[in-house]
Length: 60
Image (cartoon, rainbow, N blue to C red; front, side):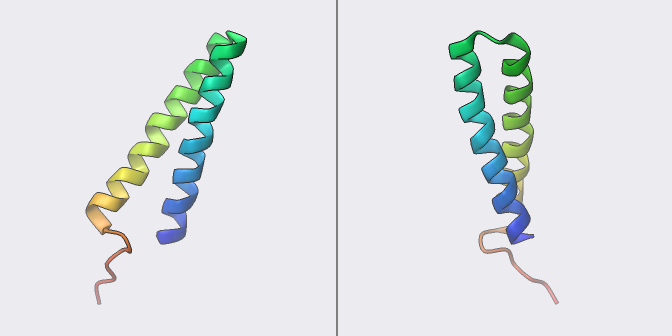
């Protein structure tokens, strides 16, 4: 789960960068999709850190 959290975090960061570029180009559809991706993947990352901890707790 640790690698998946890193990947989700990177996707969220790239979505924020894409949102900034979309604002510069004034592309409304790109802004919508980038903001949605940043919120969703950022939420997954934060929820994973809150509920699993970092590094994740392995329960046996």
